[in-house]
Amino acid sequence: MKKSFTTRSLHVPFPKNDAHRALDMPVYESVAFEFETAEDMVDNFSGKLPAHVYSRTSNPTVEYFEQKMKALTGAHHALAVASGMAAISNSILAICKSGDNIISGNQLFGHTHALLNQTLHNYGLETRFVDTTNAEAVEQLVDENTRAIYFETVTNPQLEIADISKLAAIARKYNLVLIADSTVTPPVVFNGRFHGIDIEVMSTTKHISGGGTSFGGVILDHGNYNWALNPNVKPFSKKFGKDAFIARLRKNYFRNTGGAMSAHTAHYQILGLDMLELRFDRSYENCMKLGEFLVGHPLVGKVTYPGLKNSDGYHLATKQFEGKPGTVLSFDLESEAACFKFMNHLHLIRRATNLNDNKSLIIHPWSTIYAEFTEEERMAMKIRKTAIRLSVGIEGAADLIEDIESALQSLHKSD
Ligand SMILES: *Cc1c(COP(=O)(O)O)cnc(C)c1O
Image 1 (cartoon, protein in one colour):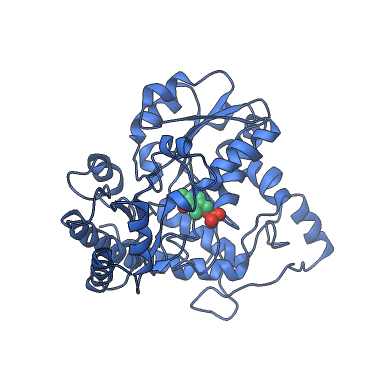
Image 2: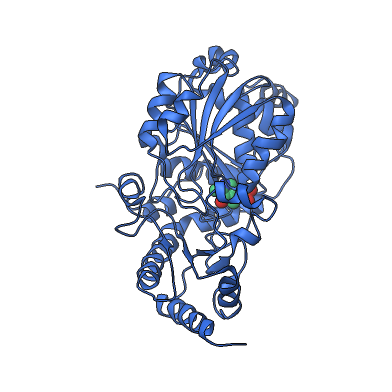
């Protein structure tokens, strides 16, 4: 029988025996690593003697975090980087070049949208934004310069879910790389390898770091894609075969753009990963309880959480994410003013913009994250003035419900 996620995470062996037989991976906070002889140095630089040399390119503590991610997901390669944005930018850079285009979901994490629409656009990479829940519309955008389809497993804050099997079929048909940002659905409930995902990127800052402890990102190559089919990675595929993507990524982008994860960060990420399943399950249970409470409440309008039966994404959430589509929900109140009043009367739930902290966090997306967009743009992105996003933490469910109920009751009072 397959062992549980937590059991497997706790017992991933170290890549090398520790000199002191440390039980937990030590924090190897050293910039450089020494060679015994000058000849060893030569062998290392020519690729014959693999070893850690300089921590911007690899580090023992970071390597152990990568090994754990690899062991837990069965990915062909895992590369840890400094943040979720570093994971996204590095993988797209390694797959595309100027003159290429990618097709991306139009509901995206804000900075990903800015990366594609502004930063990479300035270097000649075009992004074609589309509703990825509409597979026909996605297929219509493919041309001979398209290299990848990019989407988020559950969009935030709209909480929409694309049918991944349809996107994977289009990617296969046109030899495109299918890239998924699975930040919201961590590896305890989602493994892209079994859904035809080629490259999975995630911000480990969120669920994995263990409560907002540190920034991190991971790039997984699931070994599903034949890299000889991508004109940019192809030159590497002769020498590196199945390892072509990671070779190009490490040599041309990761090393040269300097987005390495630090050893201290890797230490936090390792601890967070070991407790991921416990924290995620607790947050999910809370999310369901709060969702059910809110659905029945007379002062609350639409409640969005695709884990709830009768919600739009329920079928796909069950098929793709074991019925646990993350731990973020949203709900509507009567007006923007009611949202603000409600938020200001919370005592336990924090007004903050992170996701998947151990603490429950609340935000009014319309007036904050999306404030730089026009009203029409916000409406096109399905952002509503009356909606609140709640990232559900691991507190006691009854305590959270009490906090929400008393803040809702404040809406009746004048103050
Ligand atoms: C937070 C987030 C990112 C960016 O991650 P950072 O670690 O903040 O760089 C990317 N995608 C999604 C879905 C996120 O929630």
